[in-house]
Image 1 (cartoon, rainbow, N blue to C red):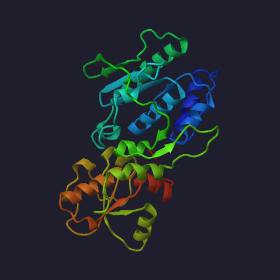
Image 2: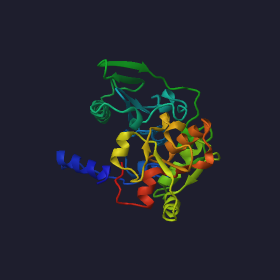
Image 3: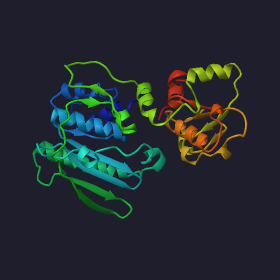
Image 4: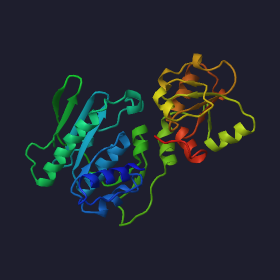
Length: 322
């Protein structure tokens, strides 16, 4: 079942008197303000795992005047803070004015996460939420980022102040593009109630993929790939995800599995065409670009657009998603 439905059932198992309203849709620049206007929300709790969503939550909450309780985790470290609390409370853009260059920060799939870390940081977030709801704001993590190092079993703090010279947020932008490079398109301003619209998964992937130049190698959609295979195409197939991801779901005709950061000409045949895929198409593009830089003829390389998740969506819905 969906995470939304699973969470709702778990909450009501604990306390059947809690009213839970779920939104089984993507939280995007087109849907964010509509969702936040739907109820008189007191606080937003962040459980996201990527930079575009965190900037979107930040800007949406600032426009709506709602505090949000933030957390981020990777490997053995976690961070927790409260943003946009009161008139002078700092927000995520005071902590991180611009996103890190694409590829600088490994994803959770690449870097891993200590299994108990989400629970630790989640309990800290819940504590801050309860304090906000009760009005017990003394000692609230506004203006401070609490950093937890699980290996050293140590908590430290980083002070944070709101920048006075920053322009207020008055519209939402293309956050995938913002986190992929310096240019971002305006995509939303405060909506009227029930404003429709959300960007699809494919469109998000397309925007996010702009960081990699694709003119030096080929790109093929899952449907086009299937048609070529039926017609007799026999490429050598490389999965550039982690082995643990490959174990969850993979194309059955995969020839090799090598993480995209470790790809080199030795992992593919010297001749013939090569089909490269990952989860959503991004790492595949990076792997193709890396191989071209290392001297491989780009005309031999085909990146699977949207990766295996789009293959699951467009070709074989029986495959598991992750």
